[in-house]
Length: 225
Image (tube, one colour):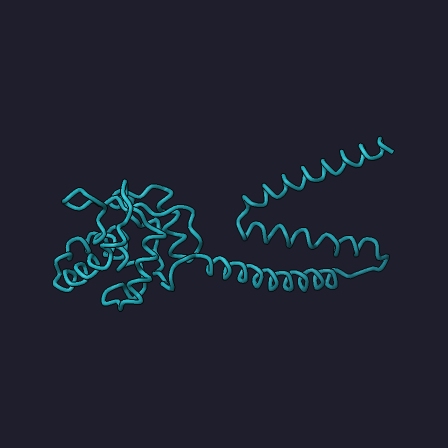
């Protein structure tokens, strides 16, 4: 009995190892790649049915079966992907904001000082997906004491739909939460206590065209000027 138990244990261990390897490989596939793999695997039972049924099918009948199954799977996969994408968006912590569609190939990384991680998390932000790390804002004001919050406001004014000027208190609070969650300054944290006053100063100065040169430079670096 013990030998049989050992044989079974070895078999189960091998199956679990194989399963983990397949799961690891599946994680590296894109959604399109994974969907194609699922569709291909799903055709195996239908193909076996044609071989073992003993009936003779015409090429038209076989093609019709495959096309029908393919369309059903395609519809089901679209709904499943949409469902899970929607769940990801619910967990994205964007505080109700929506974002413009950026062309990330056009973004001037050197101007913003973005590395690959910053760009990846910026893309996750604009697509309303959960982030991996906070985006680092490396622009430093003249006083050198902390990151440039007004520069960040100008940046957000371009990437958030309808901009962030003239926000009411509730929307400002939501913006503050978004900034705390998704952004950080290089070497310093964003001061929540000065957020409201900095926003008011930025909003007023923007109306007076004081940040016009900076805004033009940001727009150009984002590839939307």
